[in-house]
Amino acid sequence: MRCFFRISDLTTKELTEIHDLTDEITNYVLESKIKNGHLLIQPMHTTVGIYLNEGEPRLIKDFILEINKRIPIRRKYLHDDIDKRKDCPPDEPINCHSHLKAALFSNPSLSLIIFGGKLQMGKYQRILMSEFDGPCPRKHKSKRRYAISIIGD
Image 1: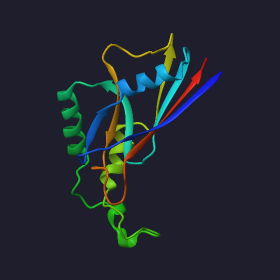
Image 2 (image 1 turned 90 degrees about the vertical axis):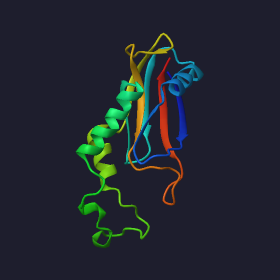
Image 3 (image 1 turned 120 degrees about the vertical axis):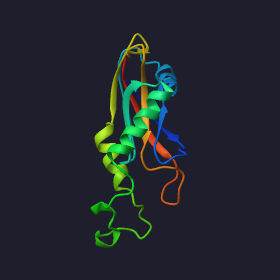
């Protein structure tokens, strides 16, 4: 059994946006030279998520509109009351909405099958990563990072 590991960066420009990582992840599968195994993608942030869905641009806009409607940005959240939080840095962002969106509308990781040197996905499935607390870089963060791990033969 062999292992392949990479950390990749992503710069975001909007508060909420969705990026298609499929082509980049496909290139990592080729680079790994692993023909049969499993791939795991894990965002390295609590306000970022990953999932599998169709990457059609108008559908992506619908996702963003619906997510923002269900969890509004301008609302009084307990997490955003910085003065009442223990050990909270003074430059902590007001971002409870981002944590809620990541927890409810995405996954903390994504596992996919590799067989015959190819990702096994449906015709319209794409690997999508959501940013819910952009843009990045900002004062409290630089780039968004995600880890890719592939194991197999």
